[in-house]
Image 1 (cartoon, helix red, strand yellow):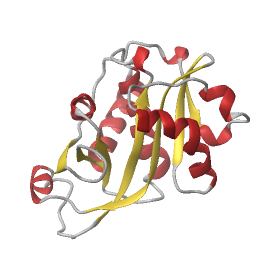
Image 2 (spheres, one colour; image 1 turned 135 degrees about the vertical axis):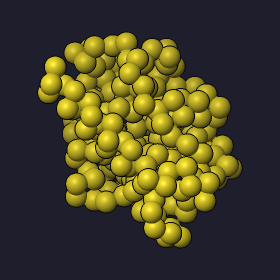
Image 3 (tube, helix red, strand yellow; image 1 turned 45 degrees about the horizontal axis):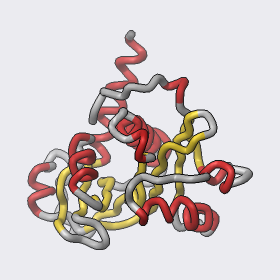
Image 4 (cartoon, rainbow, N blue to C red; image 1 turned 90 degrees about the vertical axis):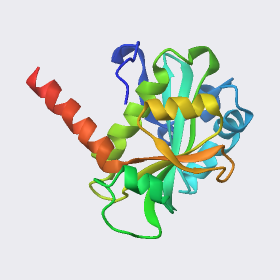
Length: 194
């Protein structure tokens, strides 16, 4: 996980798409460089949220949507290599593990490379650690990486390869939920002591 977020917390707001009165006014023109992600936030995010298929969280700077992520419950078969490199977190030998899946993660093109992706991923990590995992257990957070740029970003946030060429993405990546929690809880302790 990275700590190089450029923006101050007062510059951005992160909240659930579900709470919006008017989706069209907020989303407006959104372009991250990947049509699949652009189309999803414009046409499918609200519908999937209302049908309880997934939940989308958005990042706003003033009146501009600059990024979003969508998550849902899932399951995953973990490669032996992934489990071996995370033996501290995966002590049993299940064939399939419950997972929390990031189905969409995007930052508007003109805001990429400025720390907003890290801030949004860290918000997701906090939501998983503090709001979700105490009530719903899932040992791994997974994402399909769509290209080398996103793969590099996910690796910088602590994700590791699980399987190459899975589903729609280039390959499936994951991070142990306990690893995320340990980092978030350390950050919270540091804030309390400073």
